[in-house]
Length: 330
Length: 301
View 1 (spheres, each protein chain N blue to C red):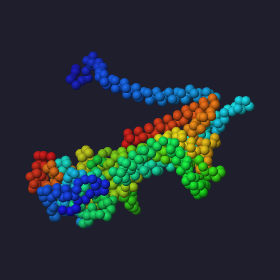
View 2 (view 1 turned 45 degrees about the vertical axis):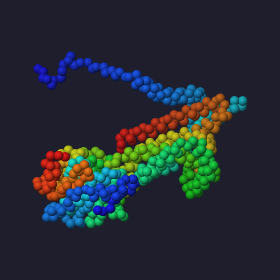
View 3 (view 1 turned 120 degrees about the vertical axis):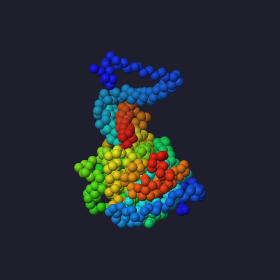
View 4 (view 1 turned 30 degrees about the vertical axis):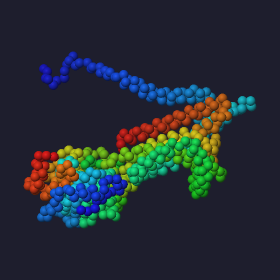
């Protein structure tokens, strides 16, 4: 017995057709061009990683994991039988310390700036101020470095002394000797100015996506602008801010020249941010590059590889956080 | 004709002169809503002198959206605003609690009197106005980062009010919104976990928690199923004991079910106008204006 609505017999079901899309020549050419462009950037990235890895493979064979954990950078003296010891532990710690100092300073400024731009600024001025902030990102880092060294540092030393005087009881604001020049604090200050544009721009982007009906709901309940921001905008934007902060952190960790000019590199881990001793993998590479021997050069390549991987991971994480925010919208 | 008001940041639009000329050229159709005073809702209490719109005009940039609306909202009543899309009824609603000015380019003229005081008077604290004139939106919009309980009490936090007993207020507001029995066991759940109809009643409870004198509802049921719609209508009928309700609706049966008075808005291509206002039974049985009759009998709109 068969009704018209019953499932057709297996033999009656036709095989699925192949759907073939015939593209025009112009479309194929354009497709080829953009595909090539896309692949070139990927290939370049891959080749850089490959180059660094091949040049530094011997270092990792020789020093193993110690290259990352060791606090000593000594090319040794083969004539007197002193073996070389290369380790970037102190530099890695220093990189994180300066970047975190920079982020701690930049984050409140950036979030405040983004809130101001999005919710307080008159609309006509908003565009021009946004442009000025984006322009800040275009200033070459050597300019920041020079300005930091000649203009900011004298002031920053005074602020550091004040901080030490009144908050010196906090371990990381203590100093082992009263030397305040070229400290992680000063490097962090410069870094914070350099990452404010990116953190501001991402925070602003997230704030502009807050659903209008939630904002109106808050206002209709008698909210002031600030209570509305606390109840609606910040909960919505929190993970976006986190993503922006991570991106800023990634940039701060890779920054080279500016930090090179205002930070005293020292191969011991130092958590006293006001004291004149710090580390930065990127700046160390620049510092040592000129006078490096064969082995040291390989060491610098290995340091570059480590920095490359760390910043890649941080950028990847931050992208993921930002994307997840904009997708769920909550 | 009162002064045209422009809102901050929107100075780039039309001149005052253009406003006035346009406004004057409008035929004076709308009659002052001389709503029957014998009609009074059961159990109504003295609630101040209520809400009153006088000669309200509204603009979006150069677009004149609403012309010369005069309407009274007496205490203890529900007023329905009906009319086809684009007739300015939602715009009018938003002038009543100063939500109109959030739209870029928005301007208005006329007066809105709450307990006899113009809410557009310079120096008025707009947050206080919105506390007294609450609003429920078309789309349910609970705060997704907050629990059900936090949503209901969010107005207290937003307006920085103090209450002695939050639990009592929470229960009272959820009861009045007809939601208590459904959520009493999961007050800590997130607002987004409720159904659309429940979310809308949560929004009503949230609006009631700040003890408004007036509740504006902008098509509160248009996104909801018939069952939820009915529940909200029951809620509205119970609210009139303590609040004046103004409800915009596209659903004429709804207007007939919930409201004491009905105002009919229409735009003939120009700005929207209030064509007629009367006790709801009269609007639907003996409308004075032929255009009202055409609309309520379903011949257009």
